[in-house]
Amino acid sequence: MKKLINNPDNIVDEMLNSMVLAHPEYVKRVDGCDVLVRAGGSKGKVALVSGGGSGHEPAHGGYVGKGMLDAAVAGAMFTSPTPDQVYEAIKACDGGEGVLLVIKNYTGDVMNFEMAAEMASDEGIRVEQVIVNDDVAVENSTWTTGRRGIAGTIFVHKCAGAAAEAGKNLDEVKAVAEKVIANVRSMGMAVAPCTVPSAGKPSFELAEDEVEIGMGIHGEPGTHREKIRSAEDTTNHLLDKILAEGIYNKGDKVAVMVNGLGGTPLQELYVCNKAVAERLEKEGITIAKTFVGNFMTSIDMEGYSVSLLKLDAELEGYVNAQADTPAFKML
Amino acid sequence: MASKIYDCIACIGNAIIENKDFLTDLDREIGDADHGVNMARGFTEVLAAIPQDETDLGVVLKKVGMTLLSKVGGASGPLYGTAYMKAAGVVAGKTEVTLEDGKAMFEAVIGGIQMRGKAVKGEKTMLDALIPAQEAYNAAVDGGDDAVTALTKAVEAAKEGVEFTKTIAATKGRASYLGERSIGHQDPGATSATITLECIRDFIAG
Image 1 (cartoon, rainbow over the protein chains, first blue to last red):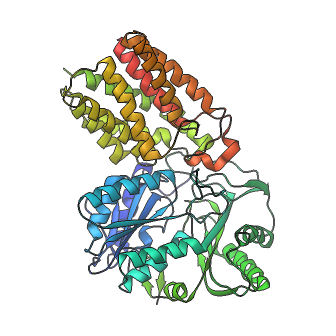
Image 2 (image 1 turned 90 degrees about the vertical axis):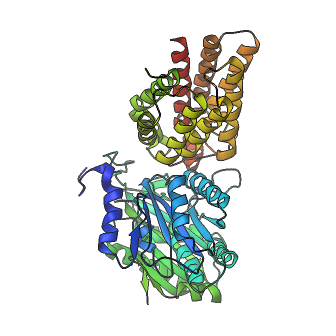
């Protein structure tokens, strides 16, 4: 393992402190906690709190700022933050209008955030939650853990964040978040595995010419492995799965996110995006907005995911609304 | 001198820490390769946090639960944290555990884990070790066995439960993403739960 680190155990702490050093106009750290909140506070509006294991940067600390999150909780690498940390985040940004928790659908995240919500509710803070489950690589089922939350989560931050910024109340902001969750689907693939620094070795192995389709953002298994194909063929395969959901039809308008997993160059992401644009044109689906970049990474994993969000007038407005955070700016 | 409950927790903690790599390797097969790392981090904190001379079982077990809850993260933190806090509730104010207390602790611990994790037996989780262990323990106590014998039967049942997890597909937790491909691998959570029971048995057996 070759990594630019000092000590694997200190990465999260050093990163959070450094984000404050780099972006003091945006974020500050809650004393003694792995929580970033807006430097200027969040008074007078519904607060959005998200978070999860570290290793997905810029998620989630990079999205703390105007038009997106009010607080981000960072767990250990790929490990959900603990209830006391989430609770501190809720307390730090509740301005009296209530708090919406945006949780990615993983067993640990859901349990830890729910326990924090119970603790905060006991103190009279109004807390609601939504669970993002956009990954179509996982079979959906009500009696299993269900689909994972991946890059589509950024659209929830963006739209619910814009609604909160516009002064909507907690129920309205939650409804926007739920509308996004109902209309966003994603699927990813890995070209090469990631290495968790404390483990020191890759989390799985792929042969030189092999890729894993449907890979999760912590290296969870996908649907299958196959020989690597062209960017166009691979992108079309991911889109086949997403379009098979039946949500996106001819005449619909969508926002697209082509998300890098951390180790794939931007040029390849643009090559993949071209395939998305061409396919959606062929399907008669209009792209209203495209985001290409590293939004929800998996440390140094090579690969990408594609997300589609179906837009109505309300969501289109929120997708295009102003946002100003360390990692996401729309002016 | 350290209290007996401190020594018992230290026995569990040290066993979890010794098995850090083993548990992490099991988790790498079907999860996200952090069960041992997270549990070892939690118990290192536990051993530093709990008072060595406190004899109130409820106080010590609650501290163990709160520490695991705030230091482990993932799914194991809330599940083990809840388990120890539920056990604490049964023995609050007590300095000794009777055979009947043991029954009540199994009941509270399993109930707490089911409430938090929304899982049932047969989903390839720690419950697949704990529920058979509970059944074996209760039957042994009802049959007149002493604590060491009853706990030995519980440990044997838990170990069989761990073996059983190799034969089934996961429907809860990260291993559920593997579906049928999780068959053949033993569940890390069932394994750490069994290690815990073994430590309690060994400690009581002296």
